[in-house]
Length: 146
Image (cartoon, rainbow, N blue to C red; front, top):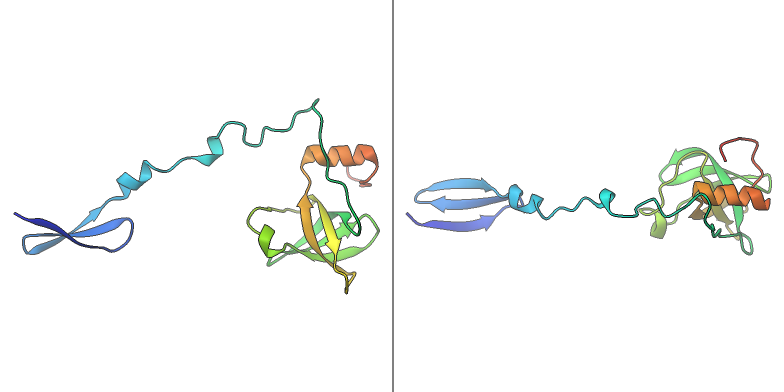
């Protein structure tokens, strides 16, 4: 009996010929052992300490600190800025995958040059950084989450 692999349909399924019959062999088990669970890596999300030194990115030039007030979808949101304006901000394409945002997150935005009511999201502050911003006086919020 001669077994030949005639073609591979996907990465998971391979079709073999055994005699005059075709067999579909599932090879998923060989791929599964190469999968690494990245959520269990050492030190993930544990880099900030309560008593340690926290470095904070401060606004430069036209950049403004703001709080996300409403998500609009399509990587756009309304942001309540520290200068009293509410801006319609978007996440630029280079940061879309790496920047996950929710309502009440503290972010750093840069207003557009030609339209001051819109802007781009530059950076998202962690809770420790937001606490430090409040201590330094850059963040004036009425909520008690920090």
